[in-house]
Length: 382
Image 1 (cartoon, helix red, strand yellow):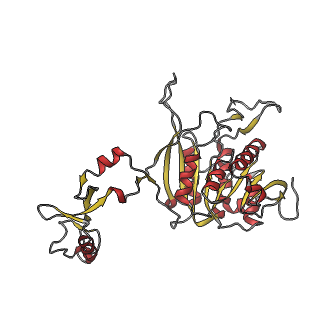
Image 2: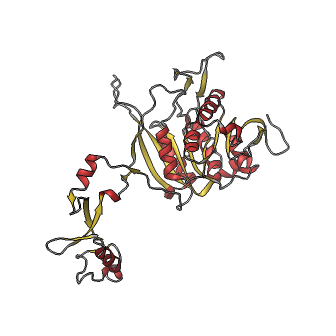
Image 3: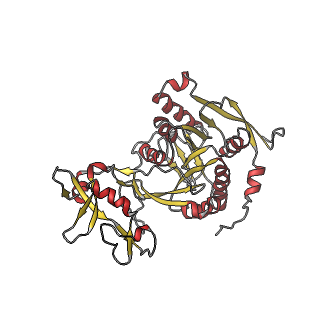
């Protein structure tokens, strides 16, 4: 399926005809902050700095097509009418197909930058997000779609509009290929979880539960249809593993036998590192953000821990106030951030400097600005 609209370019046209730029400043360090138009910066990183296939994780929180001016302090104006003296953070004024193509151009180049084990998370709202999902299906393939994550962003609202209150937005999670970095994030068990899930206590006082050793689906041939301790799996089911492995579990005391001879595997609470994270996340917006639409640091850390490894390169080309870069730095990842807003870059620099002064003195952090834009390496267009 594809989304058709006026002015839609082919992927080849975008990759071949998007201008490159020159940077004023050094971008040879492992952590890079770039001020300027991200489309040109991405194309330059791809073609001039040979970063194709090097980025393990991209998280972006682009404009949401709200036709809004965002100012520092999160004051908003519904039309583009602010004066030059106002403290503008960024302007979100693209609408309709122009907005969709704006996002699509950047995603097509971003895909080329992703490594073969790389993933991308795109944060968007319910009004435009379903169109963006179709675009991402086109670019990354619907088979590489993993989740539409619901993010609870605020407390319940009470208003007079004839609609349900909106307390969530969405994060679309895709990968470049099937072989991805995945660290399976867990949520720690609380006392209620442990009491509910691990109701049994063994002779040593350890809480545990049991799970079946067989699974749905009958196997006529093969090891999982063979006998274990003289019994076969129930009709319509098969052993979850080779009976030899079941023997090892039994010898280790990790099988509990019921009174009627039914074996079940023992799972101890103190050996589990938590329960699997689901696709509804409650990471609420900050009540007093330093930058409009600033996202929760723990939200970004969750994504980085799940879909990158230490020293992976994490990229955010709508980096805003630098939350993604801050999270990546704290988690020992390398990072690249791009934003064209002077205020965004200023706040990002301040955040990183507070985190670690050595980023400046030890040359672990570099800053560059888009200086000139070229159709190719020799022809200047702006």
